[in-house]
Length: 275
Image (cartoon, rainbow, N blue to C red; front, side, top):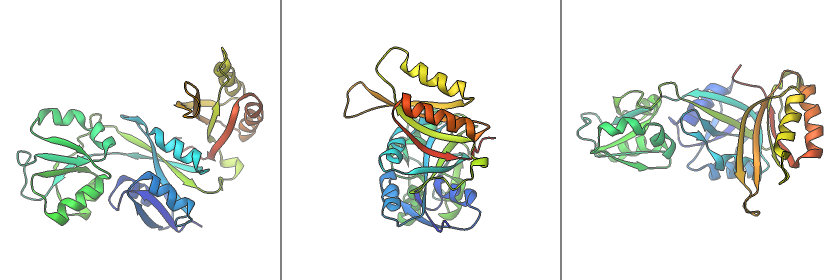
């Protein structure tokens, strides 16, 4: 039974919105300013589960989060896709001409970069969390300062939205992982997606051979991401997401890859949220 969930950010953040949409019953939210803090909350058993953004349809993968899940022995037990609509907000009675600085999370700034080309007088500054900036503007009554955040953040902190949906591409989604200390509680008949990690031999065709195993076992590769192995220069680990219709097919692939791949590891088995 999940009662407490760690999120990156505060109430009004996109991680908070996911917590409201994903869980069937209300959960207590533990606000963490960093993903490291979120993971620590899980490892120390302060929280029962965590929500971590993994990739965005505009900005791409958040690579450090894959490493955090892997290095801390966490398990992906679910996923959630959220339509991300970024809004520029500030105190009431402020106009675009009044805004001199805009603070937000680096990913949010990256997703909205094109919008600000029309406003060269505005300086963009990276910050820890979208909603936390909104809260700061209201608490400190910061004039000339804007935040990029969710519509919920504008409501909670009573800010005025100067521009709606300012992200470069209007259809903007982020994929979030639900992570726990223990493995999936989803029954095998409902599992149709998995996240795995492995290393390939530094030989010609070794990666292709492993990809062929997945294909032969009727697995569909939805994502592959390489990450340097810090201890071994120029060697890489691969983080892969795969979908399948029959769990037995994945079970067969696991047994083969466990033999053929180096340091093969299942990071999570769960239900595909993109059906």
